[in-house]
Length: 468
Image (cartoon, rainbow, N blue to C red):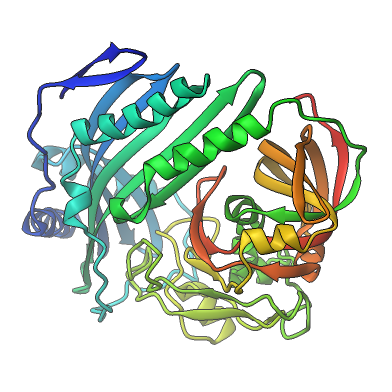
């Protein structure tokens, strides 16, 4: 691991460390074979094994200097056994034979304490998977020195403008494999990179973030420059009265709202009557400019081409021009509904069933600048956070704006605005979408990513000014 020292308020790095690498695919397959052999000898009727290896590197900075540089390399093995209609899962990060045997014994013991599941399905057999290429050698080759240089550039910009920068630059790689006693074997690997920065000027702050499988897909300098410019614009924010405003949601803000729909498209959620789509499938629900698909093969997506059960992921049209059309199905949900599994199940056992994990909301051709220019009076929203569901059927969400809220008047940004709390039905918001930008890979406050556009929405309901 390299070391860093403070230099003129930014960072300078000494020493260059060799890059670690993931072990070969053969090693993961060997672990799976060992577990399946041990499970059979222990009396399991069936067994399923997930192996995941992760190598993550993180450079964290604050007060215009790096204060943490860490690397973590780990492997986990998750074992599910089946015996007499009962199943349980145990996970370990030890891969010696005694530890694997102990995990299997624990899984069998836990399974024996469970009630018999009359709906438990036999494990699936061999599957065929569509190839995806998401391991980018340029991302895997990023060094601590590379990340430090990017951070130094951002911190130098902050110092130049009398601001304070904080954030992270993370890169990593992972691989996973799963197999079962019926001959199923699936493997996947990817790289990932993320840069997030907050710039603070006096009491004002702004933020920018991006992630991708290919580190070359975003420019950390541009992200820092955007956050710096908006932090300066956010100084001397004025207070506006609560009420309904036209809003221009940047992609990260749009993501953190629309992303809350993903469980509603689960067949299990609909069957349990806890989805906002109950009674609404096949009926107009959103504006005609809203089309949503779940597509694990979209070029801006990451993730494996198979689900937690080993079933190939299908591209599923969820909303077509404002009309919800389809749901996603795990194997169990598909059998109950007499449908075909779509490859969206989670590792069993679980209480959720399934969910679409690769949402893509189709965009339009309006730029952010065009949305601003077309707005007589409204608000530009950089980011939202602390989002909670208030009422599930109408999907009423509450949350707050942060890190850059700006008043738009007669087609121009005229001032910063103090942050608001909102109470807004997501269904209503998606009925009020007037303009869409190009769809991009976005990441926001919550832990998921989507391909989503910026969007202009009328009558967005802000209920009070916040203290932050």
